[in-house]
Length: 341
View 1 (cartoon, rainbow, N blue to C red):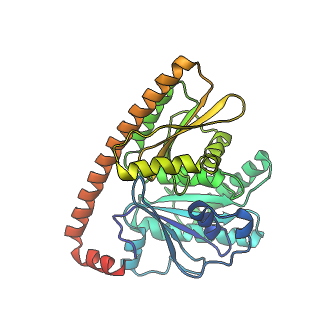
View 2: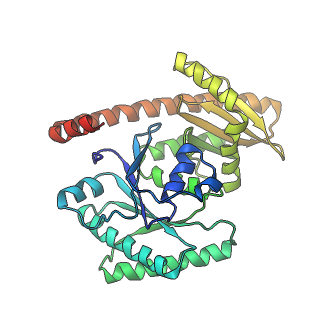
View 3: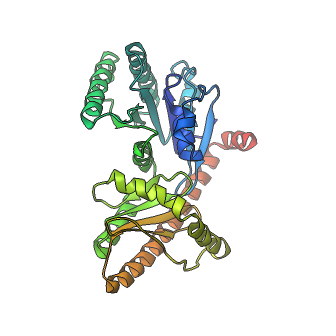
């Protein structure tokens, strides 16, 4: 059981739709090839994202029917700050595609009856090396089918967000990054700080990244470049030693002025990394700059790091206040949750 004051992201879908593989790739840095041999999940499994805010990812087995719940259980599952991510295998049979759409809309009807503010995200999954045109056609097909099924169930105001994903490229990380941003209270503040940095430093892109999952909580306001983002993910394999050195400094002294790690890529492209804390880092992608601009970028990066640390401290204080209010309002539930953990 998870208390509904904690932001939650529930992964739903039919058996073997790819839910468990997605979480293995994101949280365990698994090998996509090896996940092809995974059996379907038989029990609920949770993963915690605790860097920017505490978000619980829940892998719900395909055999579990969330439409047949008591009102009390439905309130606990669908209430509060929750996003439902429904994974659809886009390459399966037509029968299973239809079953996926029907299950999605049935869950949506139950969830919206409890919580009209629940976010519904649809991952049109396992589209790997197909053309952009083919992926667009598949997405539009599912959008039409889901819209028709939702209308039949009288879900006239239901809103679904769609993402085309694969575990063989960074599309799944991009989709989940966009989804978790809806659960982060200060995402607008983070984006504003990052955009200001890009403007002042003439950078290409900058990300506020969770180091464990490689998901980004925020980026600058410019258009996202998937190829650039994939480079930032691969950055950690190249710079693991320097990144860990920064983290050791911060563990000994949270206010330490850590050095910036920089990697030179092709085409005069560079990636720099600066730790905000031991779980969150700033990934700055920039073009080759004159020497006199390097000091400006370094100064702006340190200023950005300090501003983000202050924003994170404020957010942590607000979360503690909310948790205190929740425990005062539901003392029995809080006690049972502490016992479970």
